[in-house]
Length: 202
Image 1 (cartoon, rainbow, N blue to C red):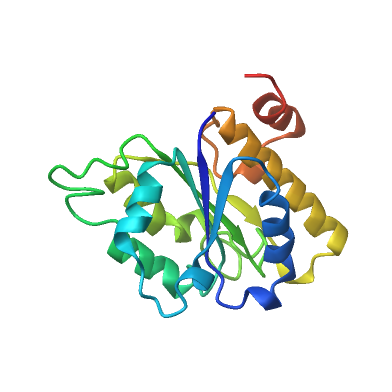
Image 2: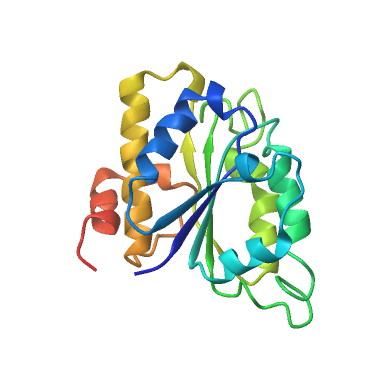
């Protein structure tokens, strides 16, 4: 079974019903390590060696965060800047993340309708996540299709609960070694494809 690590970044977790629902669900999955990074590093003083050791022992790394100003909360950027060091994560002899899988899972107040070329924001979520994707590419790792919870601020409790269940299935599928097709978002999977990737016995 592959080891899944969820790095959760939210500076105001107490105000986010969407993230609370998702984190509550995934912390119940066996053998998944969920780390609340703002709780661990409220002063942004990241323990680089500890973070690198945890990364090195993980097979799948998920960045869970709200979509802040078309990007992430600042602690995730700090974490990338400090932890993914030259000579460790990339560059000469920097192969510690080679072959690992990374994924972005984000909650957004916007919807897919406003995050498209013709929409109000002019770019798709995937366009705006390219810096994270390229960071993963530089580390010779794989960037999996993102999982998006759109319209999260106006979503009903029942819908949030459903997204939490779907994300739980995604993580369990990744634990069991299921691969994902080359698609823009996990959200794009049809029900049939979802069952193929997440319900079958490996």
